[in-house]
Amino acid sequence: MKELFINDQIRDKEVRLIGEDGQAYGVLPIREARAIAEEKGLDLVKMTPQGVVPPTCKLMDYGKYRYDQLKKEKEIKKNQTVTEIKEIRLSATIDIGDTTRLAQQTAKFIEKGNKVKASIRLKGRQQAHPEIAIKIVEDYIELVRGATETQIAVEKAPTQEGRMIFTILAPAKK
Image: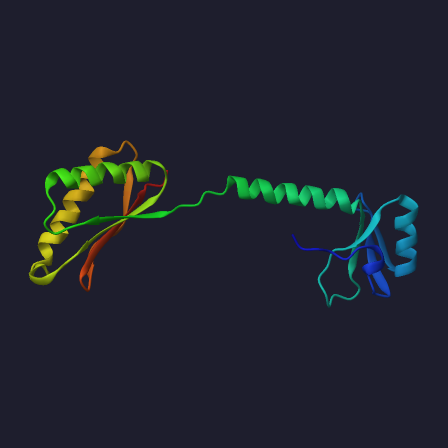
């Protein structure tokens, strides 16, 4: 939370004063503004950034204002969701049993709301036939679709970059 200047921290000669109920007092000398704030038992808070002439100040209970702002920030953080990218490594010579097991694991990740990056690293002569590895990844995607109740979206179709073939799966947006 950004700290604001209050009461004696305000060094400007004149300020535009706004009351706690939104009433505009106009442009007043700082001493007068402080006197009004003290009379009402409130704080004089500078609301505008540096460089604005005359700065706008508001009469308010600064402690209550800070408490409310911190409470809002905590609420926003609490409602945030962080998506992780989990990685699943396949192989160009993987068997159907292993593929099924990895598809079920991927389905669990996607149901929790995480993204999954599935990749195959081609070694040696496997690089001569990348279409076999791409077919394995496509079959894997179909197994994941069958293993999960939630809809999945293929964010990045199976593509080859150097020795790696990978795809990115995510929960479909509702």
